[in-house]
Length: 97
Image (tube, rainbow, N blue to C red; front, side, top):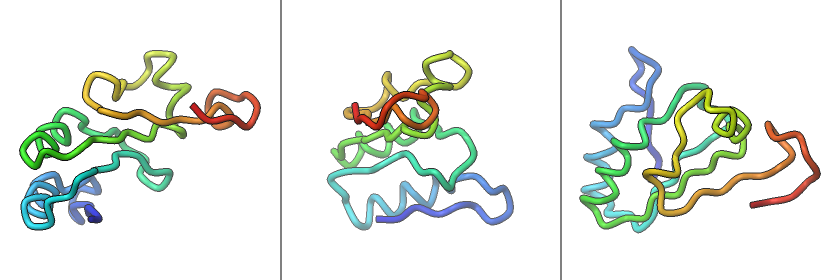
């Protein structure tokens, strides 16, 4: 189930995400993409997941260094599963976590 951006703001259209989730009833919603250069509202996505009994997976591979440095919000408080790698913003060998 894809979610879209609000064309006038450039941010994720969370209202449409909630409507789509109610229609498609996904078992998993993924928050994380290399093509979205804004912060995710993990709390809002968590509410959608809770309403649909879906798992929230946060892929923070591209932002893990910023999360580790405390520069941007962490998904750990909200996500059921968090994935990352060590070779993008953490600058380490090619490994997964």
